Amino acid sequence: MAHPLVLSNESPYPQQDALLAEICRALQIDVGRQARAAKEYDEVTRWLNRTGGRFASVDTTVYPQGSTALGTTNPPHGGKGVKGDAAEYDLDAVVEIVRWQQSPVALLETLYDDLAANPRYERVIERKTRCVRLDFPNDFHLDLLPARADHAGGGTRIEIPDRELLCWLSSDPKAYAAWFHRRSDLRQQELTKASVEPLPDHLSADEKPPLARIVQLAKRRRDLRFNSSNSAPRSVVLTTLIANAYTGAPGLLAPLMASFDAIVTHATAVAPQIMHVPNPVNPDEDFSDRWRSDLAGRRAYDQFVQFATDFLAELRAFAATQGLENLRDRLAPLFGEAATLTAIRKYSERLAKASALGAVRSVGPAIVIGGERGTRVRPHEYFGR
Image 1 (cartoon, rainbow, N blue to C red):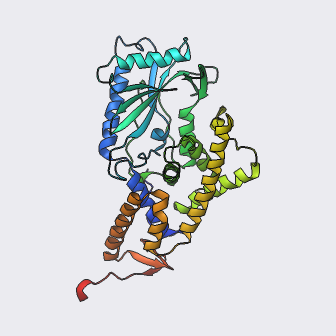
Image 2 (tube, rainbow, N blue to C red):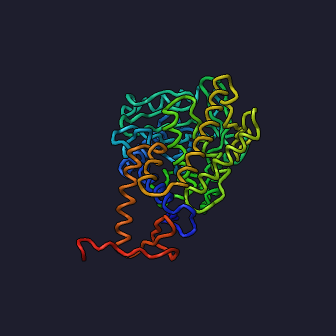
Image 3 (cartoon, helix red, strand yellow):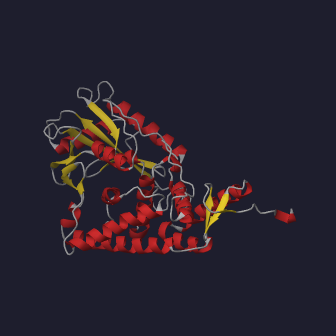
């Protein structure tokens, strides 16, 4: 389902929306890297389901989760396509075992050992607290989260192992993805049971719903603000808070501001307490638990609230700004110099093409591409023609 975003007649900030749409295009994972990731994902699933493997005798399902399933994956801060180097994308998948009677750590170790038996993975495999990572240098890494079906919880709930806590933790990434897509007003298709569920189709930035794009924009601002600090708010926390506050307002800037206005308002209302961010489809899972864990968690929460407050002020200033050069100066600190320069260049190119076709109109200080609102802007006649 396509979600084209031009300079909408309904948007209160048409020029700002067009520039934010270009930022989203600049953050898009490139088609080549997406294809390589999909190939490795398929190779992993084939290996795990091979005859004679450690999981050959159990019913196993592999499916994407997190930003991979939501369509909100961003390149890392300084990643390829934003600054030109080759930093890695983070892709996530679940390896769900229908029945597992051994310990949580045993499941993690069994997944690690099974993958390490493949010569292709022995140099790229890494143990993590809750997953096994396959790191393909300068390209992407694939985090594989082992899990067992939560038969007591029912539905699509799962239990995931934690190496440090030595216990099972409740989760439900399938239901969370379905909830997010409903918030995005996307048509839902019922998942059929299969041993492998493919990575989602590669969508262009223009095909993604506005909610997915404003989440990407918020994550990019977070990445620049916190610069890989451990105190940065988790992506799932940002995503949940934004999606909960999403109203479906037209464009990108208006709903992004509305979401952060709601976040700041809620944080103020519960102060000095810490806001609670439960999984909307699994109340047993608390996304904000790290903020309550210790003094460092409390400091991280306070930094998040300050970030949300500052970002809202920055967005409001951007909304009030006129003139392309002034807009560029507002955008660069928010989303990065390179992404901003790319956005300004692409926007100018699109504007020039639309102008040549007579499809540009002025609405106050803004320029609108397409639609019927405003005064038509005559194409520029170069060299006195």
